[in-house]
Length: 197
Image (cartoon, rainbow, N blue to C red; front, side):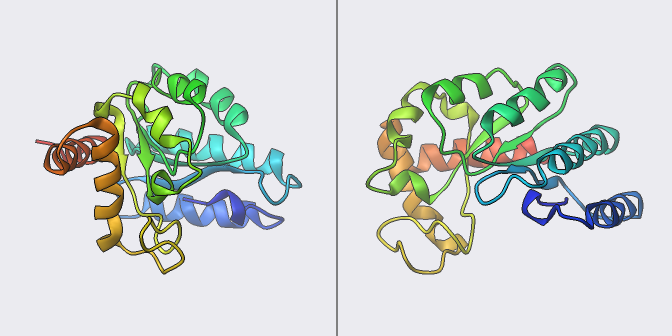
């Protein structure tokens, strides 16, 4: 997929490459990260919106889940996704750091999971409180490697091996054993990517 921070003056050429690769024989399992990023710059907001919608259409055409990147753009993303709520579109709301109200809105999308990464372990993170209202059946664990390394390794390069630190924190929040949370979140990930049992 074409990441929103890569949407600029050449977005049409970049989007054509995505389409070309999708239509060729491939082993893809999802389209993403796609979405909106308004954290640094809003110059290409309209282009980001167009690119997002186009890639959602392709996800439906090819029956792929999407991985949504949303930074300072929740209301826009929610509005774009509303018409697709009952279409069978599936995916992950990647690196979720939103509010309880935003999480509740995302739970209205039946084929989507909420991605939780190292941010949940940060001292000032509101995610532990937010997750109390999110069923474990809607959670997947992520790394966002090489970024967002969980405590106690914050500040170091993130990698898949550090997912256990996120897992331990999420298990604590849900008052479940790490084994139960690992199994549930793994099944959720396999399900969203069409690799379930």
